[in-house]
Length: 129
Image (cartoon, rainbow, N blue to C red; front, top):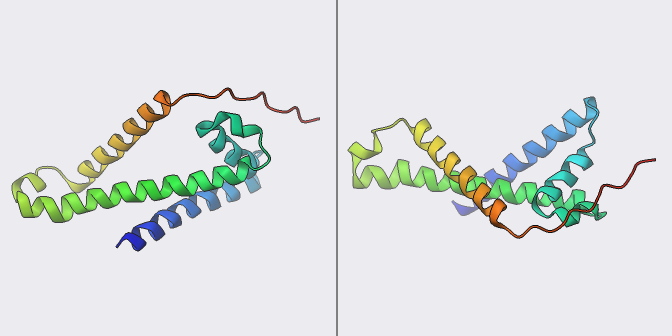
């Protein structure tokens, strides 16, 4: 089961990366710049590093696995555990509403963690001449 969650998360992350690549092929934005900004969002000082786009891709994949794990916890709770403990509680809300509550939980938790993390100064972007 853990391997399936890992693969599902990676598949979602790769789908996101492929979407950015396809979009950047027809829009005036470089995929490498998108990946660099992912890095800058998490580790601002690293945005100037040559490997920043690769770090951004790694962060995208890691976050995809985290999202898959969150969905797996929801699925276990609402499809296995809650029906065993209290079927009435498990059916009070539609599954989509309970899943959305977990997504909101993840967004809120991530926002608090991101805002409370020590910030490193982000260097000014290099000029493109």
